[in-house]
Length: 329
Image (cartoon, rainbow, N blue to C red; front, side, top):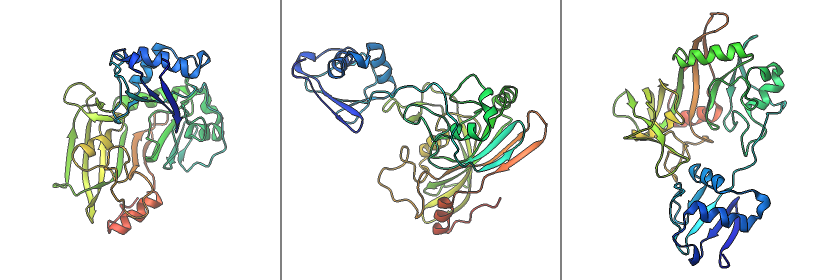
């Protein structure tokens, strides 16, 4: 591989395949190339490269994702490779402010701000909701054998704001998971979307799975994927935007964002499923999706809980600019 060239830019290794590599399987080529570039101490193996390909960590020079290990390399082909960051074994308590909406001996419900990751992962070892929860209620550490997600019973995207529930002990966590599995856990979101729907309510039923074009994105699939159903109704409109009340009846990854984009009304400010160079309403600092309300029966006390999270300030500013009245508590 004497004529192989590489550089590191923004965390990516840029590899240019030499003519001698033409026709090789991409997993074989990259495994050897990365060992040559990084040394054997980096511990890069062919099986690790195959996982990286499936995780969408390898891009072609034209911007497309290379996901099939059996793909053949072309002479002069440019490949951008992001190595996965080291894994984290456990979350560490951190004294981070939490906006607590509800708390008792069994549960804590938090209004998560935009930008906060729920649990530690590669690239986000600290500053997560779990780090903050462990400092607030140390007993959470006993709620699960998973030391990175103790007590977490459902999830929110990093840039989605609003309500998320954590269980303080193992029995409550298992009971909450059963409630969610039986769909006795009603979630209502507010989404500011681009465009005004032609009807005042509707539903999107479309299986969701990994996009064939970009493995880091989800998509509505004609074949395969997992069943997903989202119902919505319009609460207000203004200047080419609409505020929707959205109720997901399943819990697929990125479900609301994917389904709304699929019907031509992506969430405003969504950097993945929305238009790349579209202006957003003034004040909006990220995707306008808010987990607004939760309704469920407390698994330990049998109390009927209806919890709401106030809208984030930037979303309120955007709605005000558009002349859309925000729903009351």
